[in-house]
Image (cartoon, rainbow, N blue to C red; front, side, top):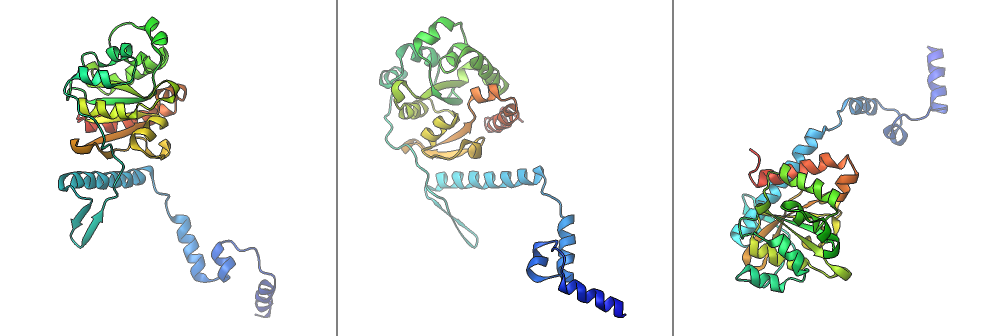
Length: 280
């Protein structure tokens, strides 16, 4: 008994290194040990759990967007309280064009490139408006022109990237008449963002897909990191013409040079396909 007493006394005089923050703060206590054991048995939340949380958040955002559009107010009344939806920046100063020809004369892009990308496009038939960061010059594009959809994509990307992007579009089950591409910036950093939105107002696509950070920032009017917002649906106001959906994606050039990005890009594309009812 004396030996046990002496051992305990020595342990109090020369305490060992605490094993947990709780021991360091409170000393050695039975309840801390019990909690420490419990903590080691706790499972790390799985990817499925995080995925479910993301889906719940996105569903809530969609619900709020639909209700604010339907009720024309940012306050949604619920049982037991109210949901206040933050107003997002929109596009209120867009001009109205009766015909495609009138629209073309207003746009700042090279008319030769306009002829390629707008040829055969019709309002409400276009499902997706892709917004690239810049376009290539006519001098770069013209020697590479072939025929079909690839010509439209060559305006925005070098041949290898254009071919990859064409495969992405076809994987999304989109035909040439259902897509349109336009840059957010022209020569000498000329801002084409308003042109993009006037094209959207005229052709009325179901989704505007921004390709890369610059296009995303210009259309959404924010500086959120693309790595945090890609694949998400954002509701924006288009003056008196209602609201529109914007989905940011990584730029095809990044997907082309980084094989790991292909899986991320495909997951984002599938969300858009479901929205367009291209997937069951």
